[in-house]
Structure formats: C-alpha cells, structure tokens
Length: 268
Image (cartoon, rainbow, N blue to C red; front, side):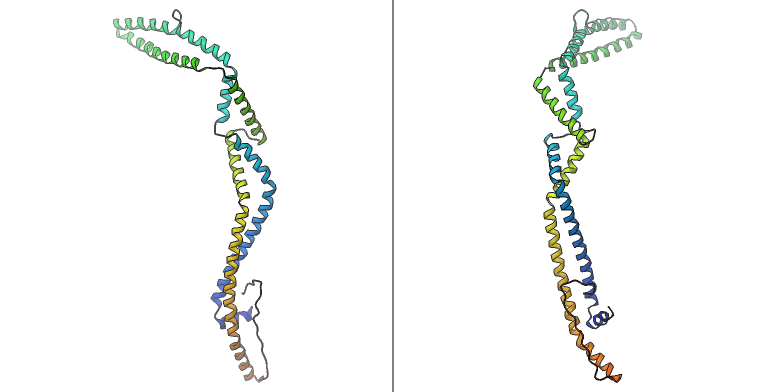
C-alpha cells in the first residue's frame, strides 16, 4: 500500500483512486443485491403455483367489503320467505283493516282529539301528538305494503346465495380469518407476491445491466489510473537511482511494474 501511495502521489491519481473506490463500493453492493434477488427467485418459485391458485380462488368470487353480511341477510330472507310473508301480511291487516285496523282506529281518535282541541287549548297538544302518530303510522303502513309487494320466492337465487356463502365460509376457514375485509387483505398480499415473483426475471436483468454499466465505469477509471501510474514509474526509478548513487551505490538496479488484472482491488 505504501508503494502505491508513493506512485499515486507522483502520478497525481489520488482523486481518481478515490472515485474508483466509490465505484467499487457501488459495484459490490449491486452484486449483493443481485445475489439476494436470485435467492428470492429460487424461494418464490417454490410457492408461485400455490400462491397463484389461492389468488385465483379469491379473485373468482369478486370479494367486496360487507359481502358476507349482505349475503347472510339475503339468505335468511329467501330461506324464511313463507314465515316472513305471514308476519308481514298480518302486520298489513292489523294496520289497514276497515273495522279494527290501527289506521282506522287512529283516524277516529284523531277526529275526536281535533274536536276536543276546539273546546280548549289544553287539548291541542293531545291532538298534535295523535296527528304526529298518525303521520308516522301512515309511513309505516306504506313501508309494510312495499315489503309485502317486494317479497317474492326465488328458489334459484336462494341456491345461488347458498352456494356463494358456502364458498365464502370455506375461504374464511381455509385462511383462518373471520371477515371479508381480511380475505381482501390476503388477496391483495397474494397479488403483490405473485406479481413480484413473475417480474423477478425482469428485475434481475435490470440489475445485471446496472452491474455491467458499473463494471464499464470501473474499467474506464482503472485504465486511467494504470496509465498514469505506468507513466510515472520511469521518473520514480530515475529518482531512486540518483538517490542511491549519492549513497555510493551506483550499480543498483530497479524494476517497478504495474500489472493489469481482471479482478478489482481496493487500490485500483
């Protein structure tokens, strides 16, 4: 190292050597990254087929947040449609019966309360409360009527919903989670993993191109350093001979060579 330091000072290549060392550090880092990528590829390829299969399963069912709750509610409605229809029909009759229906009774009650309000202001609040209740019951009747009209048995849809629920519950069990949102997270993670693995060859090729470019820069700066060192050696040899002659050793011989190597060393 000391010999190189002497030559480098005479050759005026200290800045070039510093630049070379920076390139060499980057070159080593890129090679380490390449090794890691290749190791990742080898490991990822082992799981690619299985992860792709899991991803296809999750994508096939088109998961959306809230799907499970929506399907379970629809299933309960379709699977119990006769009982639901029975209760809605009774509710509709209780509200609308011409003789004993709540709406008819409340209409009569409101009429009497309105007449009471005409006699004294203290009955006005009673009338207003009954009138408000009447409005609310009218809305309630309209809603019940809409439910009755919308209710329709659909065996095909029931079978479809039942099948989808079975698939969803199997997937929840398979992935050991309890919600659709968690399944969606798993799907997105699998998508990222599969995409990463499938694109590894391209990533590796890009890293290899970076390494080639860095090697070219190293070769270029190393060539500059080598030439400057080679050019400086004759002057160094001459100076050493003169020094030895003054010390009484005129027959001394020196030979200094800087040999090119295919390997990259820390000093160039």
